[in-house]
Image (cartoon, rainbow, N blue to C red; front, side, top):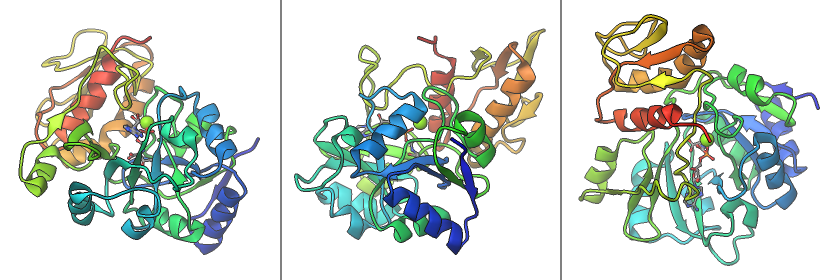
Length: 314
Ligand code: TXA
Ligand code: MG
């Protein structure tokens, strides 16, 4: 199969919407990372996502919709869901909420759970696509399962080109780390740190947010220990670089590349996957030493991705 590259103009978006309606797969930009989308109600289309990515089928997908109103067709909103959606949608926040019995969402999307992970992205191309299509789009990050997430069209095509129908060219993703996932089907729990900082969510709900962690059960959604893998091994919190290593710096700890010379975590998140892709190529098998990144704001998401990238591979 040859993957068709579409412009993000009206003609390209209309074509992408037709491909989705026909059960095809479309990669599209969001503010976080590129997603590999399919009609979330179409079993065969959703199965195609798992196949293209080589993704374990027990790992459920996030559904993307154009607005909160659309979301209500598929899930039940409680108080916390309402508060968080009105504060952060459209934006890089995914809510895990009870699935409506009449939702029509494929069981492959939820991996049989009675909850659904759902978000309204804020990227104009993603929003226009969702509006043109008019239905729910299941989309994981558009990378082979377990590898670095794509923040450019080039990453998408390098990783998965030839394995799906079309990709929309939407430039680089501005946030650069995936959405924050909060389970609000019970007492709110942070399942994955991401593009909205934990502190910002806590300010909204008015209390500390528990963080889910269950390393003894790596099949629990969102908690695969080894993920975002580079080809080269990673050494984290590196104060200095050893001989025969390459160095990914931050702030004043300068290196072969620097996530943010100014020490800005928003800039570092936007550069994270971009620089991991590039420094992995530069390393050519040598270890990548990574400077220490503070654990505040987007630093929580950055450290989470780095920790999983550095974890022993299965
Ligand atoms: O920013 C993002 O969220 C990107 C863009 C494309 O929207 N998507 C993304 O999808 O990161 P993915 O598949 O790479 O990560 C989705 C995560 C997985 O860790 C999955 O286990 C978790 O969401 N998840 C999905 N449905 C869930 C559910 N019902 N309960 C708990 N976790 C769920
Ligand atoms: Mg992913």
